Length: 417
Image 1 (tube, one colour):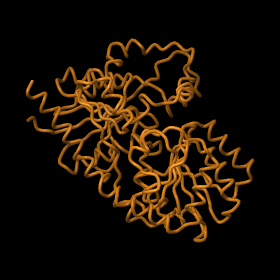
Image 2 (image 1 turned 45 degrees about the vertical axis):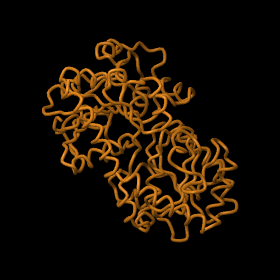
Image 3 (image 1 turned 30 degrees about the vertical axis):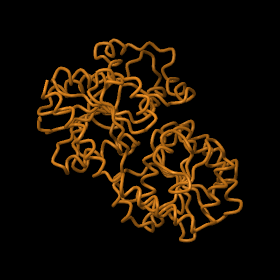
Image 4 (image 1 turned 90 degrees about the vertical axis):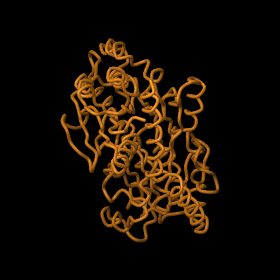
């Protein structure tokens, strides 16, 4: 079997201030692989950063210049595509992949043009290509797809020729392994590619960070009183995450629970939606009960402290391939209420380690929040079951071993010809 020396991860961007689920997975996986003696390097565009080599803890990050390959994009459209949905072109990244030495596996966490570059580089270097689907490939609702393509609708996409040259539409077809974080996409991929290596590997969490965190640190940093009972939601500010629905549910909930405060922690990825949320908070008279905190960097101790400070965690998302933030809440010992959507029911059990609510049912969401707030025994039982589950199955050391097994399998197949 070929020795597994180095894994190169390819993605759109890797900036702590614009962190999302994919970035969290790649960082924690890379960090865990390094601890297991396997070099792990992130290749990405220089979105929201500068080109060059930088590091994040033990993980080297190589950022490359890029363009958004459409004619006639306005500055506002470019800003929106950088935040969400844009398919950049980065020839420097491709040549960087070709120059990188001692690479055992190229692991693409993106498709389209960058995924095509990863595919072509792997073929030219004669090494395996692994592709991760972090959700959304098959499950993004049509209305959200429309919103993502709106910035370049009607524009001429001159970058299509590069997509063709790099085989952007053959990324999954030519992958040596496909990894799905959600069970729904895993089952669909096994139907589409019945003879391909398809794996379901859930996301993980650094359990010890959340177990050891101090909630008082977050309260002191943001001026919360010890009597404030915090309802926490950690997610980017985006129509997919449905903060508007949670604000409306909280408006009902707070009428009988005036001591509670709703706290949003997340980076703004859709500015117009952020404005709508702020307007709704003002309209409902919740200005003194709702706080919006810009995204806390993933390696900042205040992030796990935010969970520790909360009485309950709520995820009202319209669409969620997995839900890493649920694992983080579980690790912190915080009970969770979430919508019954996407991959969430695949790893969480209603009434056992979570309370699940029908999608877009704001009344039921308010009722289940109240149920948690009013019953300390329920909060304790959910939190204890969730903690056992996350420690047994979702610690990053456990998840990283599964990735290593997949890498070993595909490199072994290559070595055998």
